[in-house]
Length: 126
Image 1 (tube, one colour):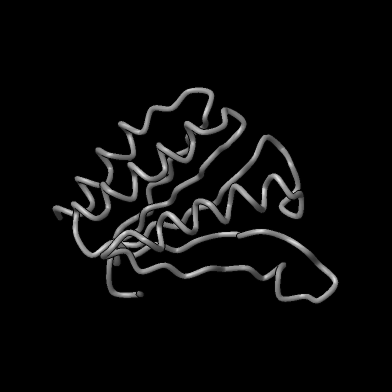
Image 2 (image 1 turned 60 degrees about the horizontal axis):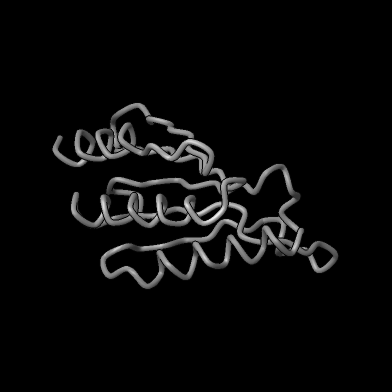
């Protein structure tokens, strides 16, 4: 995934720890949604889950959308996921080789991913 646009996604759930059942269920729901979207390569970074003494949900996802349309589909999945519970948050960092990352924070309280959509369009078109 290193030679293309990447979207690093960190999920949150109203300050709940990543080991809390509500967080785990919400994170697994998001993971399921993006894994079922054709054209999105998904990598999980679950360092905390690797320890047998630590329970937890998805720590961080690395998405590699194959095109601008697929990237915008990922944004729609994020918006849908956020709309299901206003305590949910997403921090997204978009990177492209040779350019500075762009970071966007969104929450279920104020769902506006227009900034992210515009960033995806700009990043994917250059």
